[in-house]
Structure formats: C-alpha cells, structure tokens
Amino acid sequence: GLESMITRNLFLFLSQNKFVKGKARKWGPKLGANNLIAGETIDDAMETVRELNAQGLSGTVDHLGEFVYTKEEAEESANYCIRTLDAIAESGVDCNLSLKLTSLGLDVDRNLCRDNMLAILERADQLGGIFVRIDMEDYSHLDATLELLHELRQSYTAVGTAVQSYLYRAEKDVERLKGTNIRLIKGAYKESPEVAYQKQEDVDANYIKIIKRHMENGSYAAVATHDHNVIAEIKKFAEENNIPRDQFEFQMLYGFRTDMQKEIVEEGYKMRIYIPFGEDWYGYYMRRMAERPQNIVFGVRGLLSK
Ligand code: FDA
Image (cartoon, rainbow, N blue to C red; front, side, top):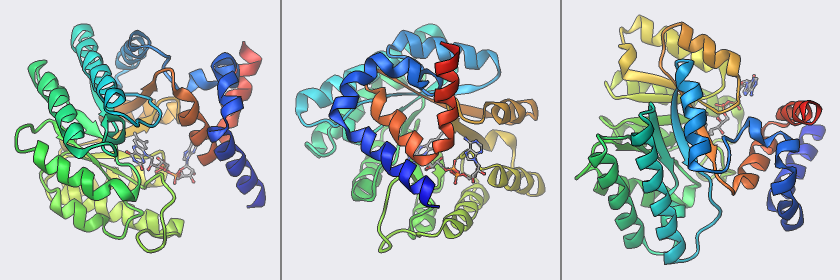
C-alpha cells in the first residue's frame, strides 16, 4: 500500500544520503544494525560464524563494500577476500565466501576481475576447497557474470553463482548451469518488464519452478528465501522425489526469521546463513529496511536494549 511505498522510498533515499551515512557509523548500533550485520572486522565475522555453527547453522560471509571505481580498489577488495579465506581456514569454521564481481572490478576491466577471481579461487583451493559464491547483481551484469563463471569453472569447481526467478530467462540459465552448485533466489533489484516479471505471484511461481528443475537435474541447489510457503513446498518435493538431503540446502540472511532457521536445522536440513560484515554496512542495512520495513522492529528493539 501507500504506507509501505513511502517507507520503502524513505529507506532507499537514506541508503544514498551522504549526510546520514556520515553519521551512521556512530548511530549504527542504536539503529539496530548489529542485528543484521556481524560487525566490522574479519574477527567479528568469524566470531559470529562460530556462534551460528554452534547452533548447527553453516555460514557464508560477505564483506560489504561500496562501488569500486579503480584497479587499486578492486585489488584491495580481492586481497580482503583472500584474508577472509585465510581466517575461515585458520578458525576451522563451517563457512563459505560470498562476493560480488563489481567489487572485484567487473565494471573497471573484465580481465582484472577475472585475475582477481582466479587469485581468490586459487587460495580457496589451496585451503582445502572453500566454496566461493558469486552473488548475482543487476541484469546489466548477468551475461558477464555467467561468462566469467564458465571460464573459472574450467579450472575450479568450488565456485557457483545465483539465479533470480524474477527474470524470464531464469529457467534457461538453470538448464545451462546443470551440474553447478547454484543459489536460487527471487531477485533483489528493480528490473524492467522487458526482462523481468513484475507481479509477485509470477516471480513466486517461477521460483518454485526453477528450484524444482535444478533439483530434478541432479544438481546442488541452495534455496535462499525467507518464504515459508516455498520452504514447505521444497521440503515436500524433495521428500516425494527422493532427493537426498545432501543435494540441497536452505539459506537465509543473518538476523532474519531466526526461529525458522533453528526449526529447519532441527528437522535435519542443512541451513546456511548469509553473514554480511564490514565498515560499509550502511547501504546494505538501509536496502534491507527498504525491502521489509517490518525489520524496523529490530531497530526499535536495539534502541530499547542499549
Ligand atoms: P519474500 O520477501 O518474497 O517474502 C515472502 C513471504 O515470506 C512474505 O510475504 C512473508 O510472509 C514471509 N517473510 C519474508 N521475510 C520475512 C521475515 N523477515 N519475517 C517474517 N516473515 C517473512 N538477491 C539477488 O538479487 N542476488 C543475490 O545474490 C542474492 N543473494 C541472497 C542470499 C540469501 C541467503 C538470501 C536469503 C537472499 C538473497 N538475495 C539475493 C535476495 C533475494 O533475491 C530476495 O530479494 C529476498 O530474499 C526476499 O525474498 P524472499 O524469497 O526472502 O521472500
């Protein structure tokens, strides 16, 4: 409705507002950001993964970054990924790495981005095959991402990406990515009707369809959603079609539906939590708020408890 549209636009505005952003570092804990973000340092992230692991939850950590404009920034970001991989190996946690190609220089120079990815995957491989997930960004980066993934998979197998069900072409992409560990999602960006379903029911129907397709293909599926209806349907589908439980996992964002995260683990399914961390948490936090203003309750709780 109108109210949620206003709230959404407010948070989208805030996510880009430089003044508020400048103050945000100080306000963060009071805003409740620490309920959705694991902290600012690699150590903070590892501590959070350890806590989640102790509850039977697996992790995937994502170092939050703002836009990268130069070769130096892209390389710095790649080095940070490598240091994060080292920390994962050192602390012995059950954890993957998630990253974004634009932060490794996809818009600066594709060869630079490829070289950065190769360095990251080489280290992940040396450390025993830590899985690296390439988050899917907006439509303008889709083809470049799939092309690069294809190239990387000639040398490394512990790498995958994500497919967004709001795109008309999602089913074709899933078919093309048969045999790859894919995260299946509804999609988080605003895309045009030329390429993407606009109605929630169409996105949802296509979501169920592509998850089932990928599982039927015998491929590993990471079902990343907070949607209880989808989760219930996929559990039933796996049961009825004898899809082994080590051929799929559920994923949720850190701090979202924590009761359901626990429930899913208790039922014996694999559940992985996406854990963002880093100094640049502000944009991520405001975008999550824009998506789901109900999360404001986190902020209020944060204010009351601190
Ligand atoms: P959606 O938001 O459609 O919610 C469906 C229903 O579930 C709601 O109507 C409500 O009933 C219930 N619900 C949802 N959230 C709830 C909550 N917090 N509390 C109570 N009920 C709730 N996107 C992208 O473009 N590229 C990517 O790489 C990724 N990666 C990614 C990883 C992981 C682990 C997750 C969970 C998500 C992503 N996404 C993403 C984001 C994804 O595309 C999508 O935008 C969000 O997950 C929101 O859609 P959902 O499927 O969660 O359900």
